[in-house]
Image 1 (tube, helix red, strand yellow):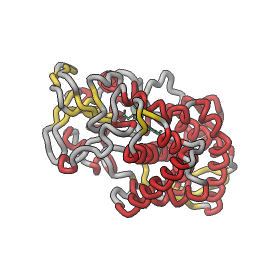
Image 2: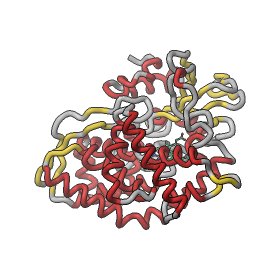
Image 3: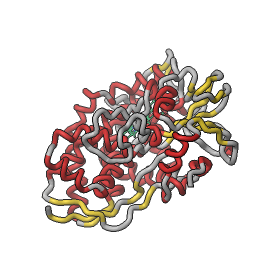
Image 4: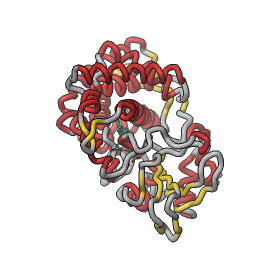
Length: 389
Ligand code: HEM
């Protein structure tokens, strides 16, 4: 039941109870060594303080060789040393500065009208059908349209981008869809090189990092990184709705007191912890919890475990929208703290506000299927129907 080896099985995360495993590990083996399988050998960190400390020390815990567990036979991550997520300081700081201005509180405020209209249009279309899939029909579209808008993808191409991304990332391995997606960004990159516009692709194509323009491959990998990263937004939003469906009392509590919106969003982030792990490679020997970890070793930070650590979160297994304080690590920490955090929170606020304002109540309309992955978690599908309040 609680064997730590099970953590690398996607089936545990899709159909089982990984929290039982993490709970056992926090109590019995918080710094746990996993021997090599088809994955490389690695260490698991499951306690809040250890995960937080690793996030905040990029010198010892490097991102440049990869941040997700992957089978050894696949070799190094293609983005290693090149994408935002997979670079270390000082290069990382410089690269992040190229795009960071588009994700600040101010920039997201400027996107608010666009996002509100998108939420309303998408919800209205879904509501017309009465029965719909909350993941595919609502939050997936919302996440993708928004990032498309920021990147500079024209509105009329958003739906196509969404279809390709679904096939390329969600179904796992549709090579054709992935190629279509990359071809699209190649064209967009050349178009913006020739004629820059006010968007993120133009910034990646035109700005310098450490004194040099980014090579084309790095521009494209960073586009892919940004589009792919929104999967977390989709999963967290869908997971939040699922949490409310499972805890209707909390929805009623929110309906009665809109001041709870901000803490509710933080609790959704903690509860769903849709980014399941971040990986780091250790650059010098380090001792954690009495275990010596050698330079070159992989360390895996299990985020949902840190976010249910009883030492930090009273009644950690309870979904409590009024939880305060709530210093969760769902968006990572330190240098690589989620670039999309303001955007993700704004989307959640807009969507929940619209749902609270509708004269309908969402009810589940069949079992949800969960994503089969050890990297991200949440509903793959969430069939719902609308009932009058
Ligand atoms: C609620 C939804 C989200 C969650 C739970 C989430 C979670 C995370 C986490 C845990 C990290 C740290 C990864 C690491 O340190 O290895 C991260 C980084 C990142 N996130 Fe998010 N994310 C969300 C939404 C978004 C959105 C909407 C975007 C849109 C662009 C985004 C873009 C990124 C990027 C680019 C990074 C890498 C930043 C860097 O390395 O400097 N995320 N996210």
